[in-house]
Image 1 (tube, rainbow, N blue to C red):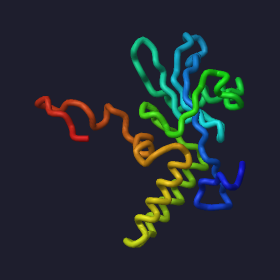
Image 2: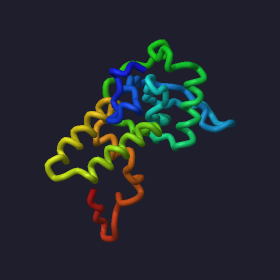
Image 3: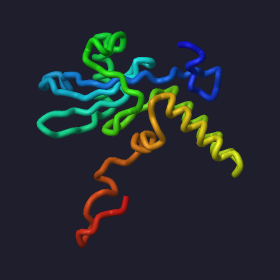
Image 4: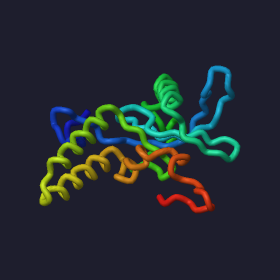
Length: 170
């Protein structure tokens, strides 16, 4: 990693700036299941799959943690991260709107470090800490909206019809 590309607030714990690619990949979710089409966002700087969804028969579904890890291992085994354009992937500067992001352990540690700064911040320094967070998220190809989407509860909790046909507020 080039030290000039460090997006971490701690120079002793460098985190590479994201290099995102998006595309489609055929993957077998289960040992005896059919191969399904997935849309994928991969960070080739890490390298790892950041987000993926199954897109089959007009239905779209986010991959669960274990399925995402299996897909990640399959794509790393094929060395997609070495030349993603040869596999039909295209570069993207930010995470697509459909993608529910995941974070690497180092990225989570950095977000926790920034959260600690935010907790300790005075009223005068809160804006500078939020700017630091936004700068870090931009460096890994995300926004604060992506961060919130990553931790949001599944739709069945809090979304839907209440008695009397009234929906719950967002």
